[in-house]
Image 1 (cartoon, helix red, strand yellow):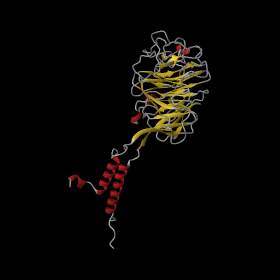
Image 2 (cartoon, rainbow, N blue to C red):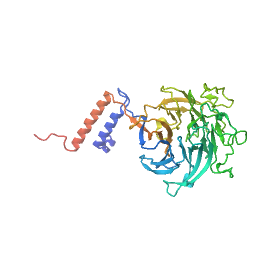
Image 3 (tube, rainbow, N blue to C red):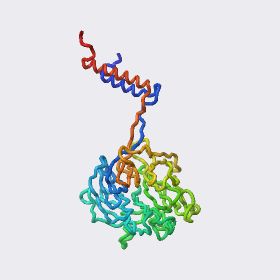
Image 4 (cartoon, rainbow, N blue to C red):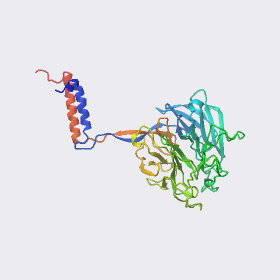
Length: 439
């Protein structure tokens, strides 16, 4: 007998045999190796029109959810249970509270920023947490910038800090259809239809109570014709943007007019100034309606992905941008997830820095364990890079890994049966039950 066998109990031999039987997935049948897939689980419900989810840097215990009518709720990041209301703004119109971003040094200064719409303008406001980490100081409101809105829609809504520590604010063209004021291409005297890049730790306008920020010295238009705050432009309604937390690349989903929805991309190496084409362009084509379409402008940048309007599996009517997945699920690393608000389909693309290399449809995979996903108004990330789907109807779902073990073929079942029989005999013998009683 091999010396090692003296060190293995009969119970251990049973476990080893059973493990081997399960592992022999290539003998006359399909592999028994578990295959990682994804699905979604209901994380929270009974929210009042949630619009976004995020978390402070490094805070793995909590997530913060904005609600359309002005509240920010805190949820337990593990259970989804409500911890309490962090802040009530109460100064929003129908589009309401859409954006929330925590300062990179939130742990030190307690600053966070909200972006919401009133009846006449979009407002970016800084607040500070109180002595209670679960309650904001409602009296600490400090306006960063106010932007007059000519119409009730196309106001963007997402805000976020880039890897450079500056706050990025996509604004939208302000409406109405076909951008009648041509705000998307207007770089002088107007901040609409663009992405702003602001240094919220400075103040270059001490005499203006509604402009409490500084202009980063390397902003694209800081030393040339164009509004200094602008970083990129040519956008219609950038509904959800995000930074890839690994690479620093910037993704911007832009809602189209009548024919195309698009995903725009800005590499981390960009020095700004991208013109994404609206209102001349809808996706990669000249805007085909409204008499406003035209050739690609000299500095124009095409989207990395677009889809046409319709009800097909790869179509929709209103894009909702998401995130490049950087959580713990290996199978979906590097995939940029996004959705359509109207058709409720969920997709991903992979981008190699030059072009899209892979498209996936996750709609069926992400059918949740409880309830249904609809009205996808946003995706969210927590501090652990878990991915969430925010449903305007009141629910939040978390993307999770699903392990499926393929059915065993006949040879594996035979081995498994033999292993179970052998293990049972060993157990009976060790228990003194392996012999028949004397007759």
